[in-house]
Length: 439
Image (cartoon, rainbow, N blue to C red):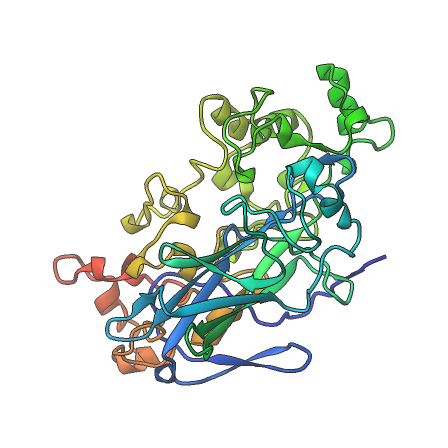
């Protein structure tokens, strides 16, 4: 039996949030990989690197010998900022390397080897053990260590095949990636940070199908649709039900997208989101401000019936997702138009996720492992909000000192600039007008 990780404060690991910020803090690592934030003046930093997982949580199939929904597939994004007045996003002259901390292989753990053994049959690609699929750059197969590639103004590593079991055989859905920025010419280390690479294998049709008198999902499908899937195992569900997440276009030969078929069927059952999506243990949506006991999924995504019906009406899965502006109506700058949150940029062309963290895990998070960068750069587990993280000319040295520099402890000192009427101040110069309601 694989040991489950005790719930103790994890090595600090954070996301990022809007507002170029200039902060304090770096981290030293003990031999046991324990991370302890240490205050260092922001002005001592020339570069900062902001890194995040693209969607905040990735679920994948635990076995690949029967019905298969998703492969192990985690994606990292990062942006490098050279601090200054003004700061600038760096895309040239640097190289970004990543590694999954205390997790150097996936093939020999649990039943995960089945993914590689059956990758050609299931996904049409013969993969070497511990390398992953890549739906962005199909010829590149990333491993648990590697180099990120430049995509526009950020760096990216797609399809990292990380699993939620580390090399000590401990199950932990909140794995950690370390990202280093190196000078491309000299190899000199310019910046380093860590972020969560969350992944869970809790998704399983067998939790309900095939228990007691209930037929397995493949048997039930054969009976209702007159197919012969049981005799064709393993079966990738997306082989007939198209999935844009897997790089497919169109609903597939079945005429129904996978998301449409699954959500519509289960909308008629007594199930909740965490019965399929990570998960009863993982709690895939872990943003403190957006989470309740049920995950709060329906508040943003709608009910399962609504999800399915909007696809039936023409919406393509993984598009037209909930918008921050739907709830945050008092801040017009968060309207992203047709772009998803994960693909949108804000202040200074930083990705929204570069400052706020990915969807489902915006800071502050219910998991300590998500707080690394906020503690590293500003010594506080809140949205990165100290201008000094990136702006070398900013006053103050963090979320505490910046208040003193701008007027002492008067409660209105921040509001003078950051929430003043447009007639006297230009809020377009500040990310979301910096309404620091949680500070």
